[in-house]
Image (cartoon, rainbow, N blue to C red; front, side):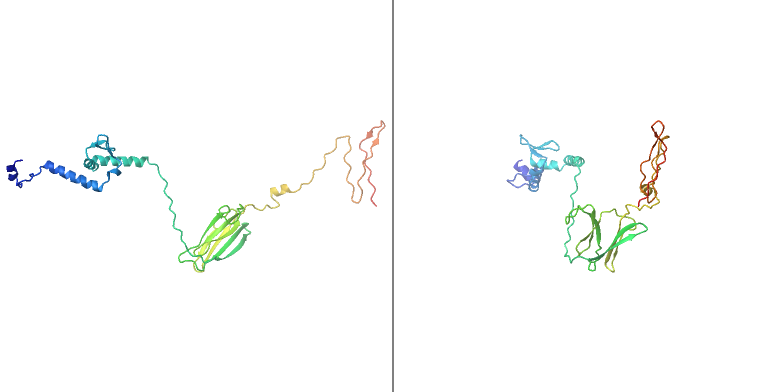
Length: 284
């Protein structure tokens, strides 16, 4: 640009003249590049790579760039944004479901004031042949809005005593009282209407009835299994074969057992069958 041309365009003497649109665009991109480099750390970009030719490459879109500003302009473009959205959707599908971390609720720490009073009543229903236990626990100083709770504990779950599978534990808890436990037989609990619990807010008494199922019913004397266990009368001995003497008859009361029967001989010297045995003599 000559001196005259510069004056015609309003430039001062000694200045470089007005910048063209191309020069303004170059200057604007350079300023944006410096501003982006101040706010964005390219070292943390997983898709930014510099190759052996000194050029910059986008690993996601497989494009080449001459400088950092050109790469930053590419990251804000439509192509790069679409490829990032596709990659995120594919990773979400291929990623296995991770188990959610268990969130533990904060343990409420309160000052215990001791054990509550209680009453245990043994009950028996003769009609249903069923036994039950009635627990009545008193909580006169229970916290406002608090309701007592109960649960069953296995003998192998507790650590206070030696494990015995014949028993289980019934626990009662209410703040600010200590937890109390009752050792009950490990029998099947009847979960019908006979099992109930009630909290009386006026008298501050928590009641629970624990019925057990009847495992074995009583058997009457007229039933089949019982009669099969009773001793039966002995059958009469079978009749002897023809021509042989039967067993001796039983002696009357007060007489000694009879001796063996005397067998008579026939004319040929052989014993004669059917001879009646004599009675023994009475004992003196």
